[in-house]
Amino acid sequence: MTDNLYALTAISTSSQADAFALVDKALRALSVTALDVKALAVPRSLAERRSARVYSLPAGVDVNSLTQSLRALEVQAPMDWAIQTVASRVRRYRLAVFDMDSTLIRCEVIDELARYAGVGEQVAAITDRAMRGELDFQASFIERVALLKGLDAAVVDGILDAMPVTEGVGELILTLRARGIYTAILSGGFIPFAQYLQRQFGFDEVHANGLEIDRGVLTGKVQLPIVDGDYKRKTLVEIARRRDIDLADTIAVGDGANDLPMLTTAGLGVAYAAKPVIQKQVDVQLNHAGLDGVLYYLGAGSELGD
Image (tube, rainbow, N blue to C red):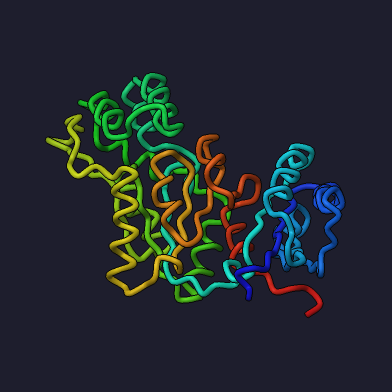
């Protein structure tokens, strides 16, 4: 059964030889010989700085020991990798949900708003602790939003114009939608930014926090309910139920402590450039490649030479 067979997917973002030599070293250390090794197709625009392979592992491989060996070696070269059951890698997923801040975009929008409000450092420090799981998300969110009181709402448009979208988002969502996978943003950030990404990339639905505005300025008050970790988990489950999708056929991608509930509930949780507390609890990670690198964990990239 494929549930008992494993595949190791490795994505190199520097010297192909250096990264894959580390994989070979980890396998040799455990006296493991891959049954098959295949190169995966890489977009032409990335061919000079990305390469990928999938290793078919023999039955009975010690996944925990191999994981520990790879983690010890990965500091030597930029490389993303994941050990998955073959069934997980080739599964026909039907729903994918994404965190927004520091996942789909390379910033925290509440920090950007705070910078305009003159409280950037104060809010950024609270955000960092919340994303690391050191503070209660709801309490810290209320505290941060209160510091935005009086900010001119027009700054939202300025932030939207310069919002740094993560590399690979367009390719990822286009491919998921082409596969018939329903996509949603579940964000602890704010609706205008999530809706902007929805318009740009075609997400099917978005869930985020509202910005309360009165006479053109932010009131500093929070609109309920707050989209926190539990809200994200419940929304993932609700969308799956509504669309008659088994949770095993769902994907969740995120980076912070408030993403952990949905990452551990979905059939496949991917920690993207995640905080240490998340990396310790989510096995499938992506830390170097663009967000489209998630596709390699879904069996994408037709094998070269096949």
